[in-house]
Length: 454
Image 1: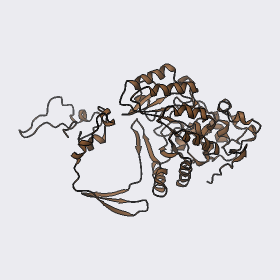
Image 2: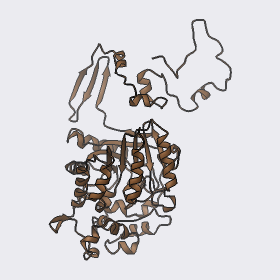
Image 3: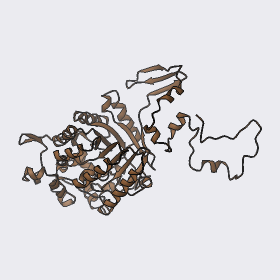
Image 4: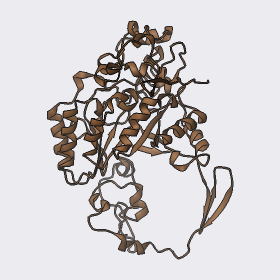
């Protein structure tokens, strides 16, 4: 499939995306007003048929009962090929009949975020960082949305009281140093409300980093005004991850929005989702990452599509993601290669998956291969003494703040534990015995596999 990008036109001396005839007479002042864009989003068959020749499959999807919310900004709708149902932009925002079909292991909350929420909308899954869901509103709605259980539902939106609960939890949890604002999309919030949240977070001494996850620059670049960038710059260090899945989404308007954010000192990353029929080829991903870095955006994550309702027809085998990373690593700049991530069903968190570059190991040697298939041997030092690291500990460091947190495999490497056991492991293997071990010789001692002296 060859995707043709829209050729930009020049209006008032700047490049812009051409508009469909429906909006040809809209004054530039209105078109470039983000509030006008939000107020004129498309969400019905009748509205979409004014700019797109809908297929029967799309009409079935748009008419389905219990449909996940649809809203498409006029700007983003301008990127849709009106006569091509395989258009990668079109597939991301217009439902089809396949969206309603169930698949194996489908879940409402595939990442178990609700189970890791100590207060409404606050997800504390990792030791030193937390996810703060601040709104259920988005500028437009992705058909594969991980949080479709609540996103787009005004009745599920978060109140000021719930924001206060989130902030109180963060203030009372000193190990959290990094907070990610997401939702929904934080940049759709009223400016004063967003400002208040950022100010409150910055008043918590132990919060070092604030991040925002947003697709507003992609769906609604008109929102990225100088005033917004100046406001965000008040709260540095502040980072922003955008969400672009295909190079066709990177328009002159988005490029200007990203430039404003970069000039405000905001580091930019991109989180893409691997989607069948949208970006599941090495060539498409190569074009995407190159166009991102030209816009000073670091490709950060490429996510495997989650096991969420409505996303079954977008899913690919994990091997497709590994193939893509194989085609990127070594074939382009290292900073243009995202981490391929499976966000573990059941709340296991983000698991990086990559091609296997370690071929073999033996005492003192590691056999490695590069992206070309070149195989080499790395000789390891014979005099490495792990105890020399003890003097590197810094009082008050991040590691010290994580005391009591689950360290997982890191604890095994450090010698603090010998095993990690599945839930119920000990009860199962005692086979119902409630007394002490039956008999041991004098030389034996009790084993403690949970805690070691190391």
